[in-house]
Image (tube, rainbow, N blue to C red; front, top):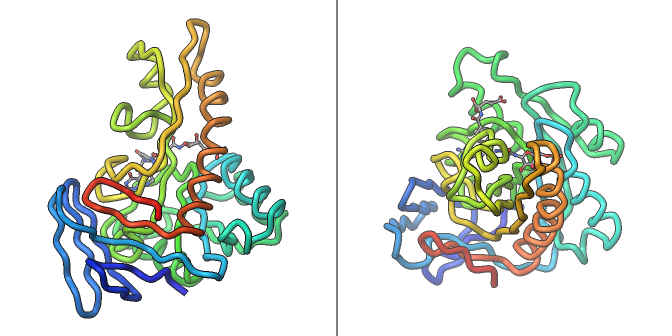
Length: 253
Ligand SMILES: Nc1nc2c(c(=O)[nH]1)N[C@@H](CN(C=O)c1ccc(C(=O)N[C@@H](CCC(=O)O)C(=O)O)cc1)CN2
Ligand SMILES: NCC(=O)N[C@@H]1O[C@H](COP(=O)([O-])[O-])[C@@H](O)[C@H]1O
């Protein structure tokens, strides 16, 4: 079941949440709350006894997915607060999907090239995710920008992990861009996804030093060590405790 939403003190179910760059709107069957930047609570999930349902989206090696799988296997879904019910991808033949299959988890693939337009792909991806009734959706190395339809259904419960300290170095090449800029520290950011590229409310960040001898691959590996631990911690806390999004601030209860 979807996680309940708390909207200015009211618990509501089946929210439709739309994120714009600097404002969020949470619309339910009965309530609409606009929230320009400094406004009140716009969306929040409640803690609950049952393990939350996660759908994870991947495009590559899936080591972040594996970290989630390993933690859930180690402590149990109830104690962790969540279970992975499906893994989706935008391409075939990737290790991320193989990891899910080995764990006995349902998989699906929606490729942009199989649809007449980007909007049709976006709607098909949203439909495939919705079929698994997730409480939270996690983009763990998912290399596609999602659009309006996806965000209308999963905004406010769609989390992304990015290999840089946002708002610096957004986009598909966060590690390369930080190195090229000559930054001395970088890291990873777990954030809610909105309709910008890596602009949504930040949940947590981890810092990694950049060494003189680093190339993109060496630096990315060190970032991923921090990133995997951060993602596992953050997803578990969100699932177990519930959270609210107040303007740009995410408060885990
Ligand atoms: N609406 C949003 N969608 C997604 C976000 C987001 O912040 N808003 N984050 C991404 C993940 N991401 C970085 O964290 C990211 C992924 C991909 C790209 C990108 O430019 N993709 C190109 C294709 C690249 C490819 O296929 O290899 C594209 O979408 O056409 C930028 C940032 C998850 N989605
Ligand atoms: N902008 C999106 C992006 O660059 N995502 C990054 O891809 C890697 C996926 O690794 P994994 O497939 O081994 O989990 C991760 O570092 C993730 O932050």
